[in-house]
Image (cartoon, rainbow, N blue to C red; front, side, top):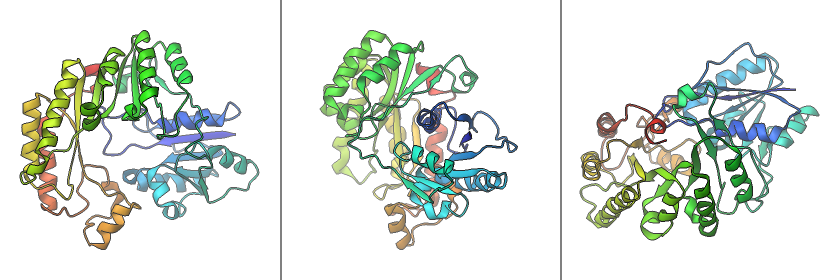
Length: 379
């Protein structure tokens, strides 16, 4: 049986922030060797509309929904069973079922194999939800490597993706993770986890073991955890060379948050002192933000001597509670899912106009946009 897995390209993606679609590796690992699996990453290659497969799986984000639905109908006409997953399909399954045969709601780890069995027996259901509880931590997945392959030219550097934990209670075996690191010849690791230090004992053991492999790695941290935890020295000793740091920039009137801004300065300096480069991740358009946030952001970048960052527009995703609340307040101004890409204003902010938000975001982006991939800079 042939399976085609598709990851779609959209406007948010560029070489500075993009990494290989992890869901493809997860589904390949779950499916086993009895299936002939072909994957297409549209950021790397064009879609082949003539491929005939028994099953076509497409991961759907809001900004890729219209293209996903177009492809779903196309491959259904070719005779394939089409299944959609990902954040948008999970949030709006009834919308997706207008175009596909089935929807995977949430993580696929606990439902993908049941879906495959149902396809074989011709008894597929409209929706599949994970049967695994978050306390079940026995699931393992082979993590992808991007080296010595045609992917290298796109991603600029060879690296291996790792995911240590799906949640605070669903954590992959440390022995399995360390064995994968031991087996890989690649020098660079990209950890998908956000705030991996919430697992204090786990992360301490991981850092202690990782330093023996002499790898370089990158992950995401928060200001609060850098200020209030002692893990950072261990992270640096284990090979951390770069981190994406989530930072909130206060607007002019919010003097009560000046202490947080000082903490952000301190966090960047602590990282710099340990030789860890910071990529600040800053989101514009929260209800507390006013137009001064953009000049404040540029001032923060100048004071910290950070030349570039990861900047986004606050986006209430379709199907979320936030979206419905704003919609009831008549604050949603754009129902074209293509624009839900973190680059376009789709709601009315409270303290500035949509136009001010869009122009301010573009001003910061123009000033602080890197000219080449983060991976090539720091790996």
